[in-house]
Every structure is written in structure tokens, then in C-alpha cells.
Image (tube, rainbow, N blue to C red; front, side, top):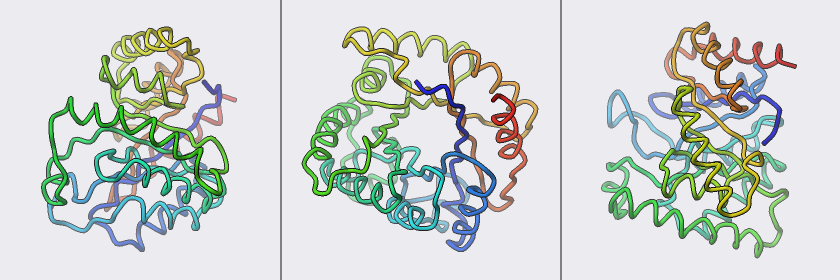
Length: 262
């Protein structure tokens, strides 16, 4: 697990915003000093007008790969159900090349039922979707070994979620990073479960970067939680940037906090 503290921003203006606003804020986020810019993988807004404006995840990541030069980019997280795993591996490899090796493959099992219904995917159950993710991950990593040209680096896989029987086992097997929304008590518990899964397969849990989503608009409260989670072993801290306000108060505070830890 890297000792470097990294600040991520999930760019939720992917809905209810013009692409001009999205493009301008991606540049602003890179200039603000964040380390990672994420979008999400949905087809409809998750709040507000359910039929409001919205843009597709991977097309956008290809544009961000050309638009940016320093930040890492990825989805938090892409839905395994929406694309054939071998195709997804190829898409990730392509964006990896466009970005000169800055893509993170964030992936999860999916949950937003409207996406499935409207686009004709089988929704199944939470368990079946997790099983599908478990089947997909080795196909993705295997496909990367077959593509020509190969990815520019070992593309980091970030898995989101805290399910103790399946999700955290997949993290132990395949992930470079694990992302979850946590308080200190739940982080300690989930981290212990992850460590046990790592022990079962002989992997050092320190190889996995721990990432926490931080919620809230009060910078002091967010920084206080970041301090607590940092002491517990979290090294990536992700907050949201939402339309229409595009408030950078918490983001700027976290960047200053990160720089002050050096």
C-alpha cells in the first residue's frame, strides 16, 4: 500500500450539467492539485430530475485522457454488468494509452435498477451480480495479457464495496485499491476482514491502497475525519464535486491538508 496521500474527486456534475461545464471543471481540478478525477458509470441521474441531462462514462474518460496531462482518471466505479469483460479490458487498455498510463479501472457489481431496465440488462440479484463480477475479473486481467499493444502499465484495479464474503475477497485477489464509505469503526472491521482474505491467498494486505469516500460540506469536519482515517491506514481520500455550485472549499482544504502531511 502506497504511503503517499492522494486526493480524489468524483465529478458528479456528469448529470444536470453541460459538457462545457464538465470540461472546464476537469481542467480546474487538475490545476487545483488533486491526484485523481473520477466520474461514474450510470445512464441516468441519481438525484434531482430523473430524466435530466447525463453523459456516458467511458466516452467521457477517453476525452479526459486527451484533455488532462497529470491527474489519474477513472470511474468510481464502472458497472461490470454493462459491458462484456473482454471488451471492457480493451476499452481500459485504450484509455490507458490515450492518457499515457493514467487510467484506474474502478469496478463494481452494479446496483441502479433503472440503468438495467432501460438498457436491457438482466438485473438479477445482488448475489448474482457479485458472482458475475467474480467471473469477469480474471477475464479482464487475462485479456490485458493478450492485447497488442499491451497496456502501458499494470492498470490499477480499484474495487468499491464492503461485502465481506465476496467483494472483499475479490479485492484481496485482484485489486490495487479498495474504496468504501466508512467511519473509523466500520473501517477497522472491514480492513480486518480484508486482511483475513489476503492471508487466505498469501497476499500482503499492505499492497492494497485503502480509499475512503468523505461526505460533507464542512471542511473542518471532513479534515477531522481524514485525520482519523489517515491514522488507521487510509491513503486515498475522495470527495464529490457537484453541480451547479462547483464548490471547491473542501477540495482545496484537502489538497492543503495533503501537502501539509509531507
